[in-house]
Image (cartoon, rainbow, N blue to C red; front, side):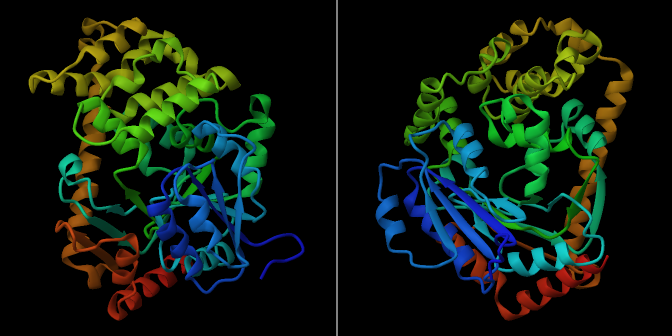
Length: 425
């Protein structure tokens, strides 16, 4: 129930031209019994059947809005975040979906012991919509969870992601899988130039950086808030298809680039090759880190011109370039990127042994986490964990089918027990 000050939660779904997936994302929210939330769907002037589909939805918790004109992705995210009225916010991709226990979990977490946090994030189970098998293989569902929570040091996470092989995808951000206070956005806007959250064309990477540089600690939980969906219309999937020159549509990716171009949003010249470097998420993070720091005086941009730091920042990109070269794949975009940043092969070969040791420790830690996930899958009841993997295309035709699997009686009982244990910690 909405209070005079607004609902407790705002769920935001920014969308453009993905009506066939959007409806399922909406359903994952509106089928839940909570009344203390608003679902804000922001239609960025879609040209498909989005408006028609939304016109059929009659629910007092649903608020459909539209920006005054078609916006580039980061502009749209910036605009829609300002429309939120809830104390707590989560953002959902239009081919993603909330967990069926989202509001139960959020209530128990934000009202229970140890609720003095501004950001909480959990694992992001993967759901692959039909049609991506030729691009990503038959990975339909990957769901791994456990009961428990950890307070992470934001500065430590920043160092690990910036200098190591740790992907930013799995960390707290103003996107799928994270729950954050609206007041945190206000603090970031007060600190950053022009009162903006985003100063790069990549909203997820930008928001990871904004979060880590404006908090002391972040709550990590073992249960997820949402499915991370991938569909044939995902911007990331179409970017990969374009980079590989693979068969299939790249219309969404081209639209993404054109809207950025129309808005004058481009990568810094030293990252002009960022969209051509295939499958290396670290490049997007580095571009966002440089742009965000340069705009807001965080100091990280100065490290890009300091050889003691620059080669370490780019080392995992160089390692990816070397792996591609060994496989006979194109590396020209990588070489342009290094040249634009004044980096030479001999510089990477001279990266200090201490950095190599740190990378080795990061690798061992990554393997340890993988082993722990395997043990949890093998002994779920003993370790109060839950996992489900499916590699059979056609088994789950919609993200709603994935939620139905989680709501099967035995699975539901296990997951609710894990929520209770996590929130009492």
